[in-house]
Length: 379
Ligand SMILES: NC(=O)c1ccc[n+]([C@@H]2O[C@H](COP(=O)([O-])OP(=O)(O)OC[C@H]3O[C@@H](n4cnc5c(N)ncnc54)[C@H](OP(=O)(O)O)[C@@H]3O)[C@@H](O)[C@H]2O)c1
Image (cartoon, rainbow, N blue to C red; front, side, top):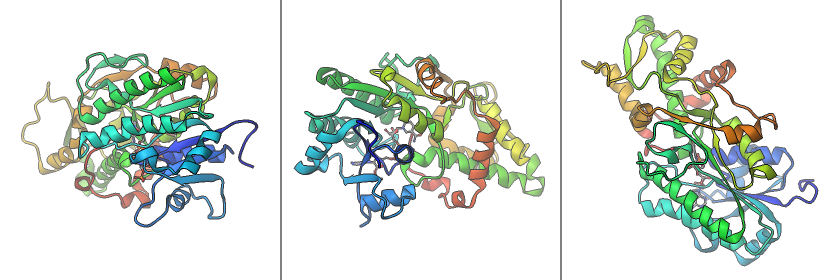
């Protein structure tokens, strides 16, 4: 029995993506009625893809999947599908997106982040729809440094890339549209999400971190490697803003429907993130790799880089600017609602780091392509 009480269905876009699949799995396991929108790929139907990603047996109809390309007219939905969605969907969680920092065209990126949600919203009305939960990013703050608050949006910031700028445009467009239609809009802004390997673009930052951990492990195992001096450009004292997918998906589950979250904007981040230096130390101490050292080039120019140091720099280059940014995301609003629900992520604890290192060294992660293949860079 999937439908619980009088609750309407939850519609999830991007259910095959890095974040969407975790959210879909959680809601499915919680017994909620979930309708997923998704695409077929390489001749494999959206339903088959999703069931295989979630490990749902073929005969289990707990997650209903509707094939949909969100950038098509009416999201590629037929009139009977639209009627079914109008009659059932109370909440939408919009996880679909293109997380390339530099998309092929900005028009493509605007199509999926702005035009698609507005078109889907229009298609669902009139109907049972009450809430729209938009998965944005904490990096709508662009290049800002220092404290960034959940209430802040466009404050004249400069951006690292079109991705950040379009994500902010999307927040603004949805706010205006939902206010006009009387739809309760909730904006959820994760920082950099880390979780099990995903071949989708949204999994690229995770995959890169795993790759870095494997490199550190390889150095430690190389005889004298444990003592090799490798300098890495960054800001040792800056926050390292990653957040585990388990926390992000649990937070999305709660904040997408909790009445007190209505109309809110929430940073989904680790409350007290480690510094880059502390993060490096936590990783290398587990691996016995002692020679890796962060340097701030503003204070200590990186002269005479070795080939290994150049290799590490190339590997991290898609995220270089983020390693030079020191931003602190205030998450008071998220904490005030998630804490009482028992969902907390105050720091990256020992177990999280253990799991991260174990994951990186596991067989599954060995199949992640080398850095050069992780292109284009993504959120
Ligand atoms: N990953 C992060 O670290 C991170 C951090 C902060 C915010 N975010 C935000 O979180 C959201 C989800 O990101 P993610 O990491 O899950 O990305 P992802 O792994 O790349 O997944 C993107 C999803 O969007 C779907 N999609 C793309 N274009 C579509 C279209 N035209 N029609 C239907 N579906 C389409 C993809 O479907 P297919 O599987 O069919 O391609 C996939 O399911 C994005 O808005 C992103 O900006 C991500």
